[in-house]
Image 1 (cartoon, rainbow, N blue to C red):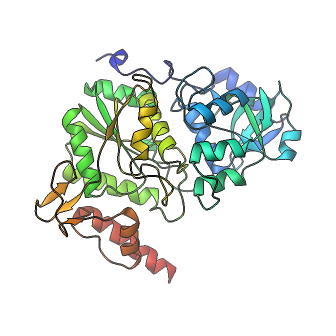
Image 2 (spheres, rainbow, N blue to C red):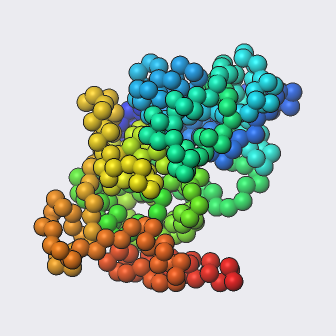
Image 3 (cartoon, rainbow, N blue to C red):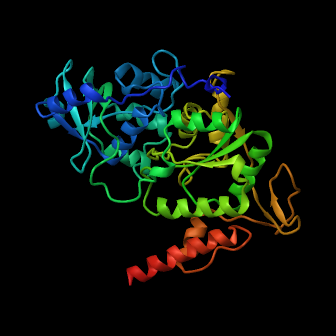
Length: 397
């Protein structure tokens, strides 16, 4: 199946900001004489997402017009749907070293030269506009809010020219075998003959309720992309390498290989709830996905958002404005009477019948060395989790 049969990227064009050959060599030589910006972990994740086209149509960090429009309307200045401003925040000292019309070298914290930015704008970071609009709160206890509050008070906008997204000395697993860029993911879908693809976003191991949602989606689409987020998450989340082992384990035992793909998304979490659900859907559109699973409290944290706010926000867009179809699922749980997964749409509510367990509750069980129950986690996945938790406990002694 030719790739043009796949869904169009957000904005119509799949961005690629990598430079190679003579152009890359010239930028490397010139970078030494440029002012420099050392990226935070979140900014490095954002740079990679822009570079590979996952944040299409963005070609760089947003300028003041797009910043204001995104915060207030969930669209860029030209009207393209986009819910969260992707910004390059710097402190006053760094700002003073830059000049509009010039360039700056962007470095990873380990010293790797990653990109060069054309500095088209330098403007004040209007956190009072961003926080209540994007996060629906300005409470510093919210991890996404806290991250913005700790950022610099100046923003630098402009297109980027990317040399690499792979730091030379960054520790940890990069998941190279599963780190497919949007163009490669689209090619894989075409190769498999998938025209309709559902994506499942997760930052936790897949439990029984997740599995239920995924398989409902598989019944209506040609294929399923399990697409975990492996960029920056908050303290307390299960490490990405452990989660990847869980995903591979459950796919091996409980999914049809020809109808299931596992790749990773190197984005940073914002925990922005409803707006982040829209962002995740648009990103998946760029990867070639047509349907996106939106469950209970997607990308939320604490009690900052209503249970189904992340589903309702899609109704704020005109029909067809967002190419991806959101699959809006109810909260699923194990029913002892039904002996399977159910939701309020599929099974009557019986007092004391259903077993609800959250990811947070499972982490509490693991911290105590207790095995997640079979009603919540497949035994093979529970084996992986309890082995990790036991090793963590032993190492802490």
